[in-house]
Image 1: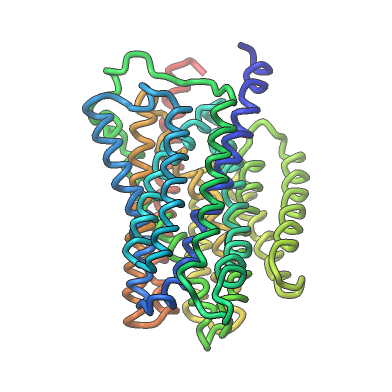
Image 2: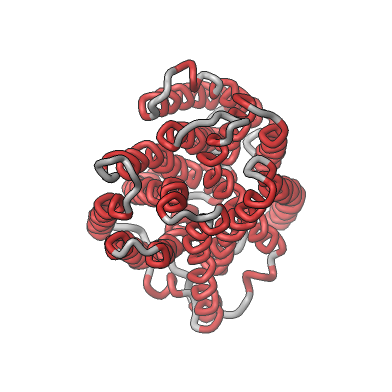
Length: 471
């Protein structure tokens, strides 16, 4: 099959999977709305409210651990059933988790809400293992980061819309007539989410997806993936990235409520939360272009400017904020361009640069007050943008027949989204929300070091491979 045929074959699968990325990004970001909602509904502490993320992202660890143990003893499950069936199973499980919100709301039970979130998280675990690895296989390995950044950009589009639309549904449309919080406000929204997921499943079931299987399933048994040091370091980096991103997103509404910061209400803060996730969307579209080695440098600059302008206008049309209130974001977009330029389209180097910027932004958010503190915390989103895709593809790079097993380990590291927020929640109860952001600072320092390690390690691996091939 020539390159033209290959690209034509992969176009429809990529579009279909991209729709799925959008939907699961939307539902995942709903957790940031649920946290302040459930906190007030059940009179929870910050630590108790962070059990939302603990149960949801804890499911990623449990599900990935089960997958990894099966793959080491019985062979890779995805290699047996195929990526398509794996993706469909994940969608059905996630839809079931959404449906469980109905009885949780009916009984107004926080433990039942947490149980529904755990099942929902298990469904997304299967999708993370299958869909991310699948996208990385739909084309050349050297452009895997670019493809995954593009699909993750639409995932971020879902996370951008979720705070505004989801916040409107729960805080306003389906709230009690007197404006007080009611557990029933989650019933209809999550039934709608379940229905949409099932519709996406029907679409995927009718689309012909190319299958990728490893010849000789016995080859992928055992712990072969763990022989690769960059995978083990990548697992730690992913733990820190998801932990840092989720912790920051989970605390934005509470952070903006602080008197010394902006003293905003939940209804207003949800729009700024959209800016945080919208920044990730901008950065991922730019990353998809910047990290695509088939585009010339001149065209990259034009495409990136066009993409940034288009996505900024989309965000402006979504959030209920004036241009003056979001114009500060233009500064972060410009800084993002500079960071991509310095990164020179190298995934590992760009990862380190972005992590370093986030460390500085977090320190600024901790030390300053008012708008400067707010701008600093919101700017983190645009520099989170390429981290998941780059960490993921760097971690599984060169794993060959161990790709799915390595993928399950990287997805297992999403446990960071369960552990880091709950640690930050404890610190917030003890020392205040603003000082609690010291936890994500350490997370991004680890990511910075991982990017530097991969810049050196994978560079040597490529040189060795070129030497062996005679190039």
